[in-house]
Image 1 (cartoon, one colour):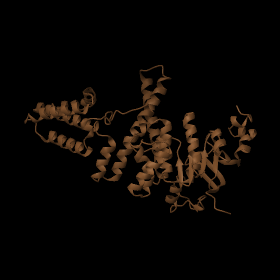
Image 2 (tube, rainbow over the protein chains, first blue to last red):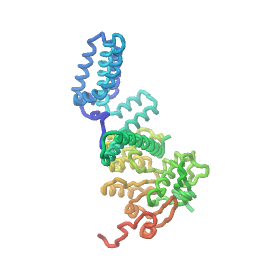
Image 3 (cartoon, rainbow over the protein chains, first blue to last red):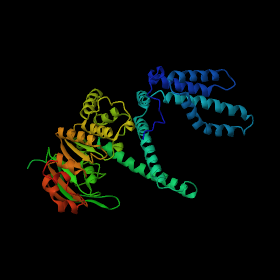
Image 4 (tube, each protein chain N blue to C red):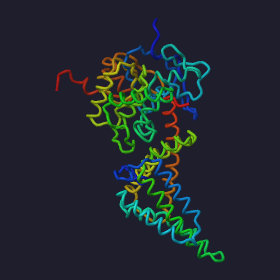
Length: 203
Length: 250
């Protein structure tokens, strides 16, 4: 089972992919900051940023549909927060601001992470002297998120193969059981990983 | 008497739940020997291997019962011991913890403080040895089980250990992967201790077999005599391997 939902297209070959990682990360950061800081009443930068992002997406050869799908995945959170802002006086502007700014920032980050392999991101972080403990944590997280998803899928399959009722209380119970199991298995795996790291000289 | 590569003196170990995993285990493995460690599930094979480079007990005991090349495993000798003993874990996903193959194989040498240039050469050589040239930048989660297993081995061999402790090295391998592993292990001159249920591997690779059951050594002798002892094998959840049943070639 292969999962690459995080950075499925990070290893494509395109003019954008070939750019140095540090450049992509710096410009993504700069772009996100600009988008956040610029007040919404100055209208014209926003369509410009959107156009720029669309251009980069086209150049990167990552399917546009992929970005749309990913955005849809995150947008509910944005919408909830934006809707809450409608409750305050003159909330319309804040609401629009939250939606537009979040969408642009999300697209930027998605674009960056899907045109830059994660190991290169780590390399850049190392060069700008991010504390090693934090880097190790990030690297381990990236490595094991796939293992965890595989494990969850295997358990889900095993459950389905012996499940005859797929709705109601019973299915909720088995879902909670799987979650608990996954937690147990992860802590046990963490211990084994630590042993494996120690065995090769980790200190 | 010369110093043994590995010596256990009255090794006992109980897990936190008080389950006794090893009871008074004493044995010597000479340098260059290949020893098969066999026994039923839960016999204590993995637990024993974890003692060989000080993963267990979690805090080195006051009276060490494990000696590597004559040196007792204590807090101060731990680093040196871990360099000398390469431990292969059962599940490759536990052992490959870095985002790329290169990083993972380079982990050991980097921990021991080698300069990056030497690390690079060592990693290249280790990947070549296990037949994974050009896999440097691959992500572990896109590898097959056999490839993962070989990355694990490369990650151990890169530190040039004098002793290899392998836990179920053929688990999950197809026959081709198994053959490859066998010839690879045969070409390495280190002392080998292999915990396995794969008795054919033991017959082909080892001169000596140790049978462990319920945390105790119940037999220790030449492979052919031990594994041919049908009564002993059956009593401890094993069986006489097929290749020893027939003397004629198939």
